[in-house]
Length: 153
Image (cartoon, rainbow, N blue to C red; front, side, top):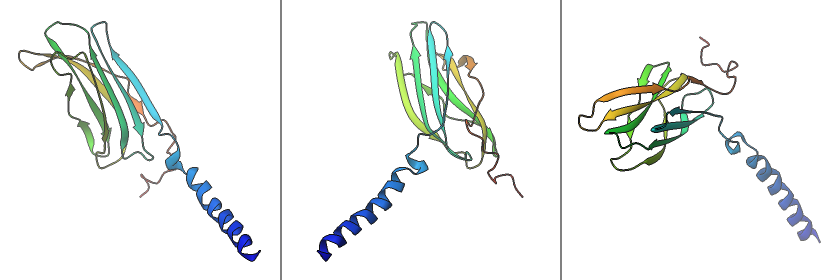
């Protein structure tokens, strides 16, 4: 009887450890901001996950669509402003002949990120020169981090 009591007590202790682990903030969904930019011939969308404080945008879901055969490729790039100034991240483009592409990535500039936005650009295929760009709305962290200590000196 003593052995059975020990097993029950051990199982209860194990359950007490496992249940809180399932409810940790890491198990919660990442706060996200999103926007879509485009017109009838192209579009670009980013869904940006903001990590706490935020020192990292992760994950960033990118989708590009090009529906016109007009001699232009479509590209998009993320722009962040923060502790390390303005950073324009790598342009991602739709390969020639493809009408839709998507990527999952992240941005970790090595300091606090105040806000971010992205551009969707038309690029002349024959020269590789950016013809024009459209900007998304400016996106901020979708949570109040005013209680964080990143600006205390």
